[in-house]
Amino acid sequence: MVTPGKGILAADESSGTIKKRFDAINVASTEESRRDYREMMFRTREAMAQYISGVILYDETIWQDAKDGTPLIKLIEQAGAIPGIKVDEGTQALPNCPGELITVGLDKLGERLKKYYERGARFAKWRAVIDIGQQVPTMTAIHVNAHALARYAALCQAAEIVPMVEPEVLMDGDHDIDRCYDVTQRVLNKTFQELRIQRVALEGMILKPNMAIAGKKCAKQSSVQEVAEKNHPALESLRPGGGARHCLPLRRAIRRGRHRAS
Image (cartoon, rainbow, N blue to C red):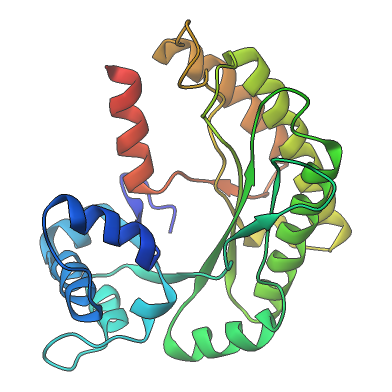
């Protein structure tokens, strides 16, 4: 999954998110049109084989078959990529923490993971969302999201599924790169502390971090060089020998690269 020169395709848009994209091109968002869109991607055999090592799927997609009856998950396998599944169930407001969110979906996750494994999924993804603003994030939000990420990761490994752990500090807001770096470090440190408490094997997981960058509304945007100098040492300091590997899914890496290049 971390083959040099290849990336992970994030095809796990929720039905609501993909509807917005289809609306922009005047395409009706139906179960059939969503299936056709993803089948089109998975059948681009040359591109899949050369550049894609894994594909993150949405719950609807993992159970779908192509027009010819072939399970979509088999198309991914035939292209030499590893199928994965997004297992969190979105976010809810965090009690007593105005404006902050907690990712949910731990209830009966063990049962769902067993079914996903039987279907062919070999890795999973769970995303925690941490915002930056006045007086946020609170330690409460960081702690409960890190704990949920660790519980999810432990359940995945028990089900023989590789957990992709995504503690994402959002790039919205007017914060500068130093503020984002400080928050990101706090979030990652707490996440790894919780992973160790839950006895997650770090060598058997994938870390999907955000990059420490200036917020979208910040007057001073960071250069590519500054972003690289901030992030590489920070990530390496968290990874002990044989520890978790880092990755950015292909869709997001491309989008962020263009944003910074411009």
